[in-house]
Image 1 (cartoon, helix red, strand yellow):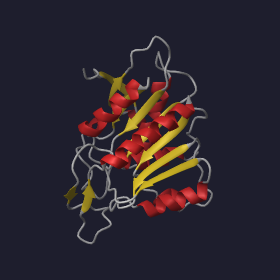
Image 2 (cartoon, rainbow, N blue to C red; image 1 turned 45 degrees about the horizontal axis):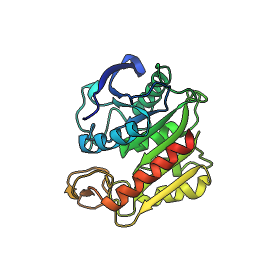
Image 3 (cartoon, rainbow, N blue to C red; image 1 turned 180 degrees about the vertical axis):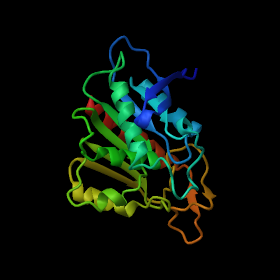
Length: 249
């Protein structure tokens, strides 16, 4: 039986109310919690439900905030100048959601995990940088699936506020692996970098590989990108994420 969503409303930046779905495992004790951040297309039911069930089975509370729908926005994948960017409003959304979640009954003390896919992964990296509005101890770990790493890799001395895992496909032509590989070399032990040869963007999603067009951030001259699942890479990612989360408990 699929888990039932608890629809919640979270105080966000600039007076916005973030709409979100919260899922709780069946546990009598406080459990670790995860903030799961969507990509530029918004909710991705096939991928979201897969990971939701994995997290619940492992005993984690998980919340999926909607940065776009909460602002009346639809998919932003083909929008060049976005209102809610990873380094701007989405970062603030992530921190606001983490603050709200950490205060909920049934959440284990010690901070929450930030996890995101694509633009959500880029948001994780933005939230990973220590800034004046970052609360100490709020984030205990971070997982970024195929993020854009260029901004972080371009900052000398960039270090995450907690242990970080990046998972990306070597064939990704939307958010290329090279900047993330460079970032891993700069950061060192606090960043666990995992790449998958031949895998594209959305490699962990249980959907066939397809081509999308008119993507402004594409690395291809015709603005196309490849997206879709790689079952072998996905299974390895599931194993590695489970190990990362277990190490944070």
